[in-house]
Figure 1 (cartoon, rainbow over the protein chains, first blue to last red):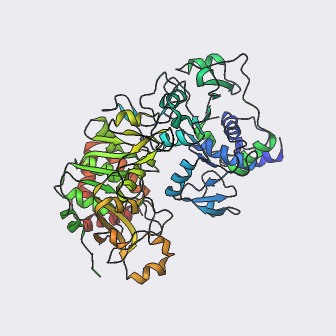
Figure 2: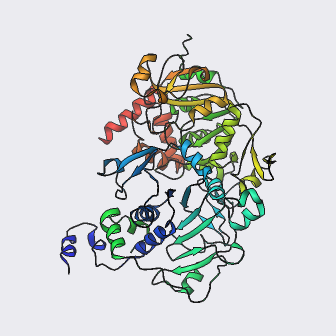
Figure 3: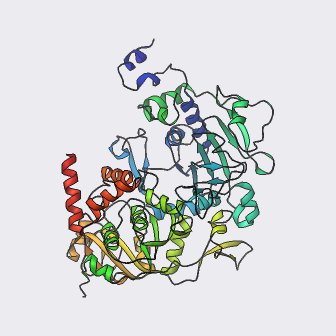
Length: 275
Length: 286
C-alpha cells in the first residue's frame, strides 16, 4: 500500500481518492464528460449536475484550457476549485468577467456556449423533456419547466447527462419536447437547423452521440462492467449500434489525480454515481 | 420631485382582480415577497402572474390568487421544484403559458419598447409552439428563414424588490445580478418597487457604481420600504436565502395540515407579524 493510501485511511471519504484505487464508474463518467468538451476553445461550458461539473473543470485543466466557466451565480471565473466549495474562497480563482443572466442569454443566442443538461426523458433523436410528465393540461408530474432548453438546443452545442439510465429516462417519445432533437429541428426548417448541434449523451452506463442514420442516437462506448444486454434492457428507445462496441476509455493517471485530489477530493461524485 | 413612497397595502389597493402582474427576481432570489404576502392578505383573485418563478408563484397558487402562470420555470434553486406550483399544475388548478426563458425576456422587452413582436429562433422545433397555439412565425424580410414572433408580454403592474431605492423611485441592486427587474418595470403600466431601505438619492451612488442604479424613476409608480422584504429568498448582500425556512416551507406544503399550521404561524397576520414570527423561529433554532 502506498503512503498516500495509508494516510487516506484517516480521511472520512478518502478511500476512493488514493492514486492506485480502482477507477470508479463516476470517474469514467467524469472523463467521458471532459472528452465531450475537448477542443471547445473559448466557449462557455455550462454543466448541470456533479459529474458534469467535474467534467468541465477537468476539461479546462486538460483538453480545453480556454473554456469559460461561471461561479454558478453571475461571474466568469478562471482557475479551478473543489466541487462543493466556494470558488471565491479558493486561492488562484480570479473573477474574469460579469455574467448576469442577461449577459448569459445574449451569449446563448450568440452561440459560443456548450451546455450539458439533465433531461428527465430523452428519445432516440435527442428530444428531451424537463417540463411535465403525462397529460400537459394536467400533468402526472410537473417538472421544472422548459427553462432555457428550447433556446439552448436551437442556438448552440448541447449535450446531456443522464445519471439514471433506464427505460424511464430513455423513452420512445418524450411527453413535452423542451430540448429540440435532430428530427424536430429538421422538421422545423432552416432557421431551426442553422445552429442546432447535439453533441453527446453521457449516462451512468454509456456514451452516445447522434451519428446514427437520420440523426438517430448511436452507441459510442459502454462503461467498463456494462454489457450490451444490460444497456438494451435499460433503454426504451432504438439506438444505433455499429459492430463491436468499445469500452469507455480509461482515465490517465493525471486525470485521476486531478479528479481525486484537485477537483473532487471530498468524493461528492460518489453521491451522484455510487461506486 | 414627487415622493412616491407607499405602503404595501397602498400598492395592493392599486391592483385589481384579473390583472396581469409581473414579479421580478429569479427563482428564489430577490423576490418582492412582502408585496406578494400583501396580495395573499387581499381579496384579489384571477391574476395572471408572469415570472421567472420561485416561491412567489407557489404562494400565489396556494392561496388561489393565480388563474394563470406565464413562466419558463418555477424553482426554489437549492430545492429544484416548488411544491405548491406542482400541486396546482397536477390538480389542473391553474392555466399556464410556458415559454423558453429567453422568449420570456423577449416578450417583456417587446412590451417595454412598444413593438408588436421580437423575432427569435428559441421555441422552434419544441413543444412550446404546440402548447402556445397563438404563437406565430414570421418571415425574415431580408432572407428566407421563418422565426418565432414573440408577442409582447404587457403587464398591468410589475412588482420588484431592490436593495436600495430613493423616494422618487430610483432603484439599486447591490447583489451579483440585476435579473430582469428593469424589463418588468419597462413592460408595466405601473411598476411598484419594494426595497430594503429608502435612502437619500446621494447615498445610491455612494453605495456602488452608478451602473447598479438599474431602475430609474420614470419607470416606477411607487416605492415601499420593506426590510427583509425578500425573505425567504436571497437579497445579497443584505442577506442570503433563508435555507432552513425554505425547507420548512417545502415540507409544510406537502401536507394540508402542516400547511394550515404554517399559514397560521406565518401568513395569518401583518407583515410585522410575519417578520416577528421569522425572528422568533430563528431564535428557537439558535
